[in-house]
Amino acid sequence: MITLYGFPKSRSLRISWLLEELGVPWHYHLVNFNLGEHRSPEYLAITPSGKVPALTDVDLTLSESGAIALYLAKRYGKGHLLPEPGTAEDTQHDFWLCYILTELEQPLWSLGKHRFALPKAHRVEAMLATAQWEFAKALAEVEARIPEQGFLIGDSLTVADIFLAHTLSWAVAFKQPIGPRAEAYRRRLSDRPARDRALAIETAALPPA
Image (cartoon, rainbow, N blue to C red; front, top):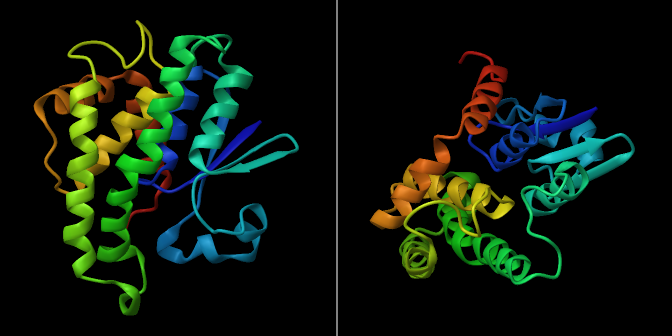
């Protein structure tokens, strides 16, 4: 049985969404950051970084959402969610996934770190304006490249679509403006039933405040 370790509103949603798209059996294990469970010896034995998501599948343990998503799509996708290896579409998918993780998401996470994630003594107020500028610059390339309708590559959903829609939703949550084409893309991808199911599973696991 696949077990996904996560926390609501984190990167684990992109993996739970992917798992629901794949339609494979899986179990969600809440790592309650509010209770410090990400620093527990039990969780650090799974991933020393203490971050989410992490995933176990029989005797395999993985961290880093990009690596997890590629493993799941290759192992369980049956030809879906990834382009055929070696094709032009495959190369485009590599571009998108790398760009999302290294250029688009990075400044958003800088905002998060310097607003709430880092210890207060290590937060730098001046970083916020720089991160917002970096995000706007990266978003401009996304806005110029994404299609007005459909998906990033071809006629079907890929891992890169899940990652881009999730990252754009982070931007909205962080109150960063996104262009009309990016917003339309985010909305149509976020309307997928698999995403709704994944969000419900993660949200229901969190105890009431």
